[in-house]
Image 1: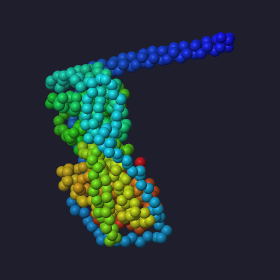
Image 2: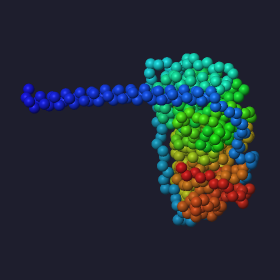
Image 3: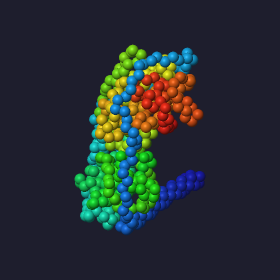
Image 4: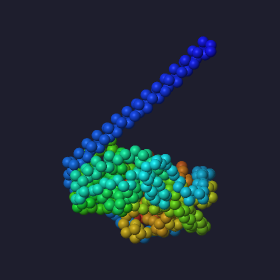
Length: 485
């Protein structure tokens, strides 16, 4: 072996040893970090359990907020349809882009659309909106709740549950959440299904487990108790209507249940502190439609415009509508800004495209107005649901009836996403409408917002064209619902 080769071999040998030592050092460092992190979290959990034994107060429960106390009209006015006169230079809709068609294969209907990495640890199975999901979880956690429910029993619960290693479980819930495109509410529903599965039918244990999971997920969740019942308390970035709440440190904590609406008129015992770094508030806004498997339903929506009848075939996912069934009633901006499901968006765009292309902006808007005014049957929420319930656009396609706010929400979505025009919501006492900004000045009722003229477009006022306000609200100045995303 030449001297050069000997030197090269020595250098390579030393390099390999250095890498091995570095890897070993990294493993040692990583193990030490993991140990220190576990020790830190254990100390936090123990301190929090000790805190829970002592720091409870009685809080007054406030009655649920109401969106609008002014009754909506039971019957809606009609007007004789008129053909609008426009300048020849008015902008025309040249092309409407159709979103990519969803490829739904046969095997995807039969098999799970999402997967996570599993270990050999015990497993549980849940059904999440028709989708079978699997988790590693200690099903027999053997946590006994002492009776009656009080500070000590809840503190003991936290101490017991926090001594179980949930690392794999939370990694799996995070993976499922990302793949299913779940917002905060969808994540809460997922955890709720899990806690119902592992609680053995105990509502109190289920709510305590949900509190623990949400807290460990970074949310500022609390529990309260009254009359031997546990209640989950959650603050929210949005206003929630129809649900009672307590006020702690100038923040509303709502008595949220994910299976039904709960309104309490009793005082409740809870605490003013919080778990370290659990600062997130539930956000009910929806950035993208959830990716949930379900039953696709087809229906035909019929309407008439300028003496010509049209039929729009629409496909929607029934499971998407069921996903919103117990959604908290919240700010109208949340409904206006929520996207329509992929299936419905595609079918509506394909159906409306040949009717709208080549028309002027105002004429195309009139087509969409007539579509929503006539193709959907009107009933108030009280008549259909027995109480107030704003509908997401997918729900408007699902339920047999809709009211003014539901129609305005789906009309605004069509105007914005098919015609690419700016739209705002108009909030009158007892009525919701919209207004649209057109490139050319149009005759008719207008609203000035942010130095821009928006022309009134009422999807509930039957046969009304752009620029026509319901007579009852002609002299009323509405509140503006800003829909800029």
